[in-house]
Amino acid sequence: MYLIDGKAVAAQMKKEISEEVLDIKKAGGKIPHLAAVLVGHDGGSETYVANKVQTCEEVGFKSSLIRYEEDVTEEELLACVDSLNKDADIDGFIVQLPLPNHISEQKIIEAIDYRKDVDGFHPINVGRMSIGLPCFVSATPAGILELLKRYEIATKGKHCVVLGRSNIVGKPLAMLMMQKAYPGDCTVTVCHSRSENLKEMCCHADILIVALGVPEFLKADMVKDGAVVIDVGTTRMPSSTTKSGYKLTGDVKFDEVSPKCSYITPVPGGVGPMTILSLMRNTLLAGKKSIFG
Ligand code: GUN
Image (cartoon, rainbow, N blue to C red):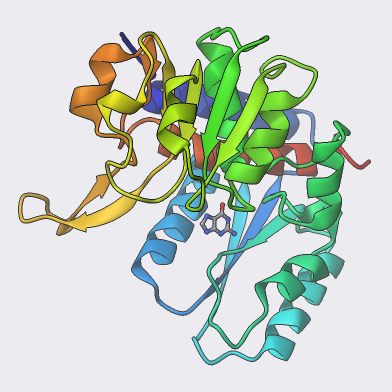
């Protein structure tokens, strides 16, 4: 069994991006600039956004954090998106989700200029991804593909089972794993909370990607010997043994599943660290105008 070390791959990607930023600086080019919009004070969102801003600093990007209180109106947020769309210094920006219930997330996402949509959530980016055109690919799926690539994991002709159908992870991953490319060329099955024969499907998987958000959902009797298991779960479980008071728990019962796998990602230290670096890479591509000119 090989452990897929997302922390090490993310560190390598960070080094590669930093070197490219240095080259841009030396050549007198424009430093990539990422803006993040954060609404309210949700603990998870605060941490994610703080990590994104800090990673920008570490790779040499400019970053801006725009904060609103929970009671910001949809109009105010749309006006913010509009001004970021028009700001020539901002190469890419994200609006951290989830948003409060009185704001339509879809309306906000669709207001973002797709050329600055480094989250890859805009329907133009999602549509282009689904037909294999250049686009911003959302960060978690892109990070998973990067791990498969850097570990040279064979995907062609394999049966990939994706557990979860979210717009951010499950759906884009299913599209990417079936695309005519490497990583890709898989036969893909998507299972979700309403699937009747989920265990049977999992047992047929060569590659299992678990993105349900249900802690320790995947047990050993759901996994074929030699399978590749990618755990996207990051549920915060209360813990008395950590300083933060919580422990990140994956969707895979790691202790019993890992001995059966050829490759597996741990939680933490697997998919998680890759997500931010994928966002950084999208920001670099936005800064260089590599995708949409
Ligand atoms: N909330 C959880 N993951 C993400 C993400 O990748 N981007 C944004 N904008 N919000 C999120």
